[in-house]
Length: 347
Ligand code: SF4
Picture (cartoon, rainbow, N blue to C red):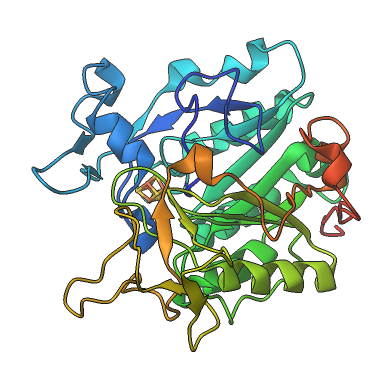
């Protein structure tokens, strides 16, 4: 799955994640695939507060002085498959907040059972996020091939009108994941750019309905350059793609005009006189900026809550229209939310 933020990630029928209402974890355990996994909160929780819970035991480890990491083992939990069928109130459900449904060791037959439950529980809306969208695309294609017949139509296509499918992208070399998403049949195709770790000049928004951007939080969190976000926001606005800015994460850029700050050659603010103790320090050079960033913006480590989710003075909470009407916690901020486009292959 993708980086989504910390919340009530394990059980179930409520969630603190800003863009969903509940989580459902019929699979647990995972393996890292790219830099966005480096500080995976699911691995941290699995190796930490959940390590004595039997279904999570042994799935992640926490080496001394290093981030927690998954061991690579995944466990399917068939006794959780019927959870959404028992939830009475219709809700938006994030599937597998503690794993990746399309991990190569999750059997195809089991993924099929998850999709059958989503088809049966059609009063809910399901949101699936993966860092392995090629398998997702191929798998969904096979479901449609197996379950649709010319003489009887494709009832599964109607049933899966409640399933949103997306991928996580953190750096430009992983923008190919969006290509797999746009090839996948889904009621909503979406991208989670969290933790955003660099600019995404190669990102193609064609046939993408919804984009979420978020910074990293928790131990070892890396900061996010505001210019990366503005570029993505502007391209979403231009393309009519719903844009949701979820959070700055642990770090917030120090953007104040008050002295003794002054503009650097990159246009960012630098304090050469009174550096707060919590600014990032690039020790090898003795200068004060985050070494992974191109710009010389300076950042404060204030924590996720204090950093908030304002971008240039406002919140961005756009969602595909079907969700905005029922769930958006800040509907007044919508301001031209992109229309929901339903992609179904004609058969
Ligand atoms: S794919 Fe998702 S769940 Fe798996 S290690 Fe990476 S961030 Fe964690």
